[in-house]
Length: 220
Image (cartoon, rainbow, N blue to C red):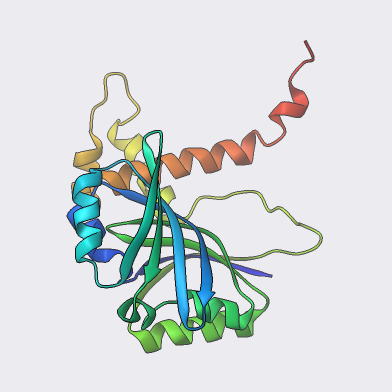
């Protein structure tokens, strides 16, 4: 299986996230409740829910059907509208046998990890992205084999660059010599995007180096 990590500048939820740029959305799944209809479940956290929901009402790509508060995050169920369906990539993935392994969305775009059965599936998917006029940046391509069913997590190039720059600039010094806002200005992205890159980088490093932590922990 081919695994692709990519950043998509996709129109889905763009208006909503523009209204609440600090919000982070985590995709859960898509469902097909009826013929030619698609619904999507996602978590939203870390931002102003009032502004986000105002943005959802104005967003032409989705219609909210319900939401549930769970602590400081909110689970949304939305119906993808006809306009949203025009560039919806999920049916394309289903058609070619692809999988959404992970998808996190901010105002900067959809940071996704997709699985494809073969290179032909990858080519078909990116051909469709091109046909839709969607901008994208591929961060990483690797292969999942039977000999290596769970490859060690690795940093994307963007995460690596952000983490290295944060260390160089003294973000982890005590006291801190630079803020996430200053780093965001350097990279030309939002403060939230820098925070998310650093968080994911630390998580990836932790998973890579401490996967067997529970096995090595002494019994009590």
